[in-house]
Image (cartoon, rainbow, N blue to C red; front, side, top):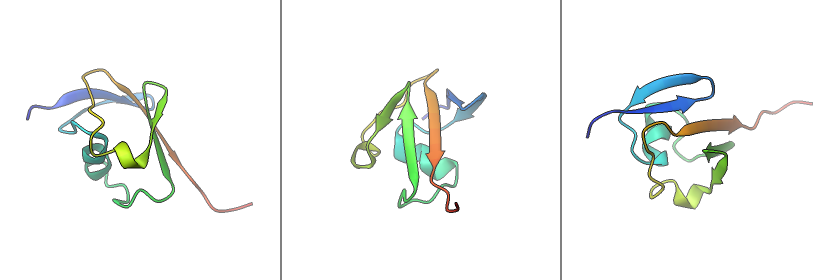
Length: 70
């Protein structure tokens, strides 16, 4: 598969990720998805849909990570 251009936060990246779970792997995020929420074009994608939710050229990705602390 050829790379696609994704906007992750404020940065544009060329990645081989064509599904959300591919994106998780390419960005070296925890594969179990614990403490991570992913939004594609302002819509949160549930963890159960990561393997099937397709990414497209120009999609805007937001990654939110839970942090411990107080």
